[in-house]
Length: 249
Image 1 (tube, helix red, strand yellow):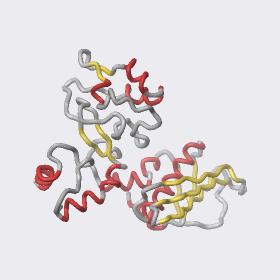
Image 2 (cartoon, rainbow, N blue to C red):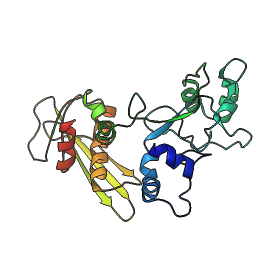
Image 3 (tube, rainbow, N blue to C red):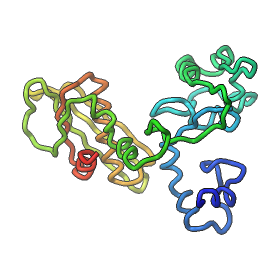
Image 4 (cartoon, one colour):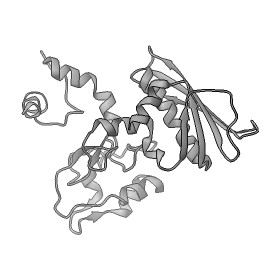
């Protein structure tokens, strides 16, 4: 009921992400608007008719990252996703799509199934298969427990001991600038003899707080390890609250 009241009052003719705060907003609505940046990073449009989703501005490309179209010349003649469909055959217009975007983006678009029922476009939670938000899926999104099953992994607090033979030690750290909401993460991988196998740094923008910064650092460490092909890991970081949260999942 609360959602229907808010929709009727604040965003009757648009979606919640595009709605304005408006005059004399309620405490609930103002709080939702203040949290929208965090929500936007975690939602995705599930394409139905395609008439509500902007091709160039909205997050609708499949996957957990890079859901918007970037680095392409915006063609204003085609504005919503339904313009990329062939209504007579209920399929994607592959020729048009490839003329508007690069091949990688075109491949992503063409992989999206078009519903025969032509249902409405829907905002969904991209970290949960059902598309429905859950607290557990939020922890998974931040702490990368979805990668957990891929690794034979031991997460512990930092120490100076060498890992056992065949195990790669991953150390991660983060520097968080609360004023600018920036988090710079660093990752280093070493083998049992101390030889450095690889390292990287990564910048995250629009980070809510220090806990999220630490979770992002842990997440980045795991993605780095996966990209390097490491399977047996000991992951160490000075982020006790994050590690405890992961172990509860």
